[in-house]
Length: 393
Image 1: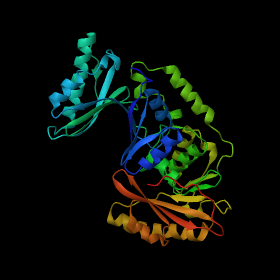
Image 2: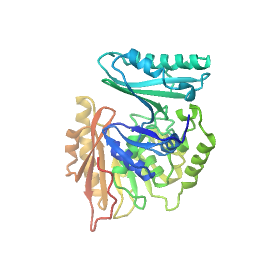
Image 3: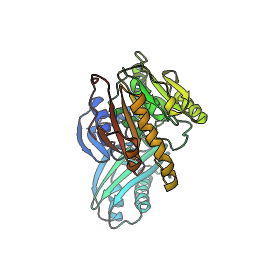
């Protein structure tokens, strides 16, 4: 496989994260040709895919297009895929898996489409090489992705394999942890700059504070992962990958490190957050405290952000108990956080009304399938700080 030949690259992500992925891709020097609800598109090479996989914080998968196909029936798809030179892509002695997104009236079970793709690849390789590779559900090696809508299909190399949305440092998830990709986008949306303090009461497993520290010190996700699907494609140049990782290591800088504070009243949560921060190499940048959110240490400042990700409540009894918590959050912001900008990430807008403050921005996100908002509250005293506008959701 030629790793320097350009083709279409489609980067996927969770809903409402596409603007942040777009901003990341542009910051890496790429030209985005299209942004859509769950991703962005550009042209580039498989070597570019290596760069993207190592650096993107908010993405899920990086797909490299091999061929567009017209097919209305699974048998047509199978025959077309027999003409793809899979012997140039996959090791006939290796292992591959198939994923798919199918919207075709002739297919009522996506597993059937997967089987047709697997059969075509295996049959082609057996005819060309006399060998048939193993296949199955494991995404830790080569992964092929099918996108099929109506009569139009496209076959990709999923160069990521296992999702990029999990950054690899979180060894202990804790209770209801925020997905790393979502946490990174949330930090980006706050317009926080590392020159200002970052305060995260109710830190749970520490994901928001850790992602803030990673962003501030230019620690890329590729530093925490050593296996991608692109490594199992024929033509992969390990030396190119090693140089790319060396660049990631060289860009890390703790100079002017931010002041990051994280607290939780649960001793277990604090221990978990500290362990995760240590795995990410940023424990020395975060001050962890075991205390109620109202006792969280606040640095004397006219800048900085205070960000909460409280529970949302799934049952009536839980929601009623949380009403007092949300009221107390609002009191804490009003009484103790003057000079900061407050943020509350919540999936319960009825509870958010109990905060008692008017949000200056309401930024839309999803957490899993739950419609969420990042609510911003202006708590300034005196002149507002200069900020950098985030990508518009």
